[in-house]
Amino acid sequence: MKHMLRILSICSLMIFLAGSVSFAANNKVGFINLQRLVNESEMGKSARDDILKLRREKERAVAAQQQQINRLRNELNTGAASMTAAEKQDKVETLKKIYKDYQRMVADAKEDISREDRELVAIILKKADGVLKKIAGKKKFSIILKDPNAIGYLDPDVDITDLVLKELNKK
Image 1: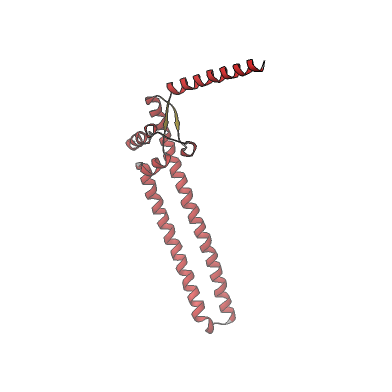
Image 2: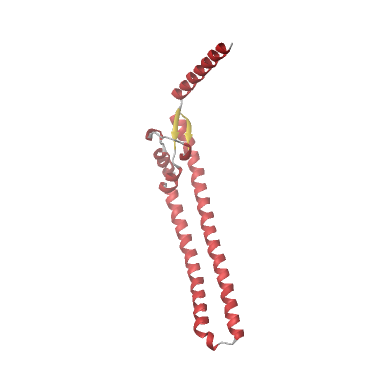
């Protein structure tokens, strides 16, 4: 009986493997590099320019706040001897407040830039998804992988990123 079960198991495995080979032979698999889409597409380049502009604006605002902190710190260091205790305390409190505002401004700037980056990437990927579906239908792909971390090996012939970039840049 055990011998018969073993034979049935082996036969079932062989039938399954034969079906898998048949599936693989009849279906095309492709891969797309999402990072390249974001970095190399016209939309992606434009988005990067927008993010750089935003970053520069935020950096200017942060630098202005940093200058104010440095100015107050210098006033406190150079004029402390001629200040009353109340004046000195006021300057220290003002400096603490401005420094706290500065830290908040830096954190907000980082978050704004990060959020803008995520939103722009999402827009690009949404548009690319439509192009990807169009190419998949036209070229008869059954599966297109998007996650390079899930792939142990990738034959360069299945990478359709260039096709998608070309179509995406047409629009």
